[in-house]
Image (cartoon, rainbow, N blue to C red; front, side, top):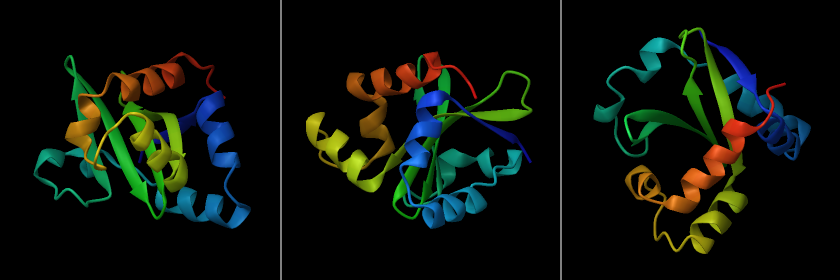
Length: 126
């Protein structure tokens, strides 16, 4: 099991959820290395997904109405959560970015999506 590390942005985003929702999401978000193996063969509606750009892998975890975007640390001991987007926030992002669907391939090609992720990457880890 990986250690989960949040940054300031993702910690603030998850704190916007009700306490019950936070507990539910965090209890579901248990990431093991085997969860990420062969991820390209998972169906589109699987809990885990992968988005790639310039040889870099970003992972998505879908928990009820929340999307968690994270990467595996270089030492493969932890996952670093860059963004936690609730369904309403995520749908708003898709609308503003003119993306028609909630598809990882569409996100991979979106400059706005990567700017959102990079903002999380630059944030201080807590």
